[in-house]
Length: 566
Image (cartoon, rainbow, N blue to C red; front, side):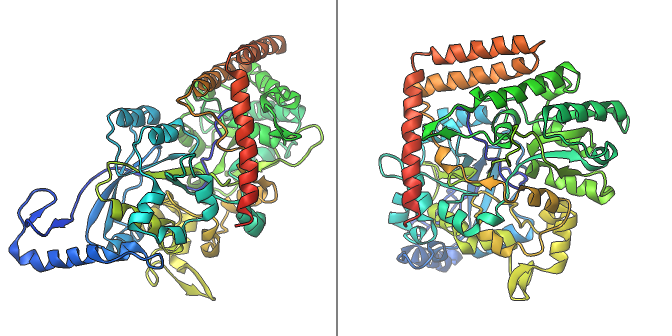
């Protein structure tokens, strides 16, 4: 019942500003109330004429008006620090479309920031957040965001030409309206077409030099896993004067821990359904056996306190850059740039992917690839300053043209057609493969602005992007990556009694999980786990929650079958 994590693929971060620059021709007053210079009357007339042009389903609406405008765009991730402007890609797009962006990100708790804006009904023009977050449905139910299909009908029918019908169908609400569009989304048809090329973000990695010094132990069994962690701590108690951390995980949050929930369950190839009925993977004997392995690791001093209390993204990034983790069950895109820098200093002191925890049959992991839900969704606020320009810009960003501009930039400046393929110029590619931070600052391409990225479309432009150490990790996941789309969007509406009850159950699991790992014995573990299961199964809403999720799962299966016929 926990929320699925789609933190998907090599990304960085964004922030703030805000402007408006459409003119009022009749009054000679600009949108900010300042009187216009009469000498600008011809320009004003041109803008008016541009906005009077008719939209067409065959022509992008953004081309009808490229006067300057700045949209505020909220990104619900505190690690996003990228700015718009000052690099080749964003400057090119602003020059081309007239649109500038002012990114706003939460300084602290993302949920608190978003809830505050929702309560005040002061949402910015665009909002991007994880599709799995409760706030998505709350904004829709509260009438705070606009239906994209209605905006497109009125202002930009070209939207329907560039939007994927399967994704629109997937995100259509019961009222027939679509409020959000995903990034990093792959439909069943995409899997049929590109499946063998897909990689997963879910990995088990080790520090190469330490792992090899230990003789490359098999860490796929409980005994081998614990043995390797103990040996690493004994042989390498310190890294550059700082204590080694034998195993690293994702942050413990109010919904659980991605590493110990979805990731571990996927490595163990535990099914999400059996005979068409949803299966609570937390009850699986193999999963519980491996949670006890982590409990033993904690008892043996292999999981220091900071694994539980200070594993925020920034703190973890710092420790990874210091090479302090021996092993991590972790999302590899989060540390791609750090790993690249480690590689440049010493190719042996990088993190590499290896076979991690496995079930007794040693089945291959079933790692989550991009699902049709994607990773994030982008919505347009009811407060948007210019509906027509907003939907037109959204259409541009999700189109092939927009994706190509965002990824490659301007032809002749950052890319060209080389050997029959559009790809980065050699100097640009070299910087991307050697110094991601410098690449972002100068060029700003290759997923720096990822809000509407189409990771399938971008495969055509990724020629030459096979540099180590990222290549080894990505290649390890190929062939182990599957779609889990049918298990997305199963949770009850968070504003209903079932949704509220499920939220409480999820939080209870999040509180129980670290207690399980810190239990003094397997017997205490069993007692804590039984207490948790008894509490949730005796909840008056438990049966209703299960029924809602099962019905949603069955609808998803039919939706996905239908999408293959489109």
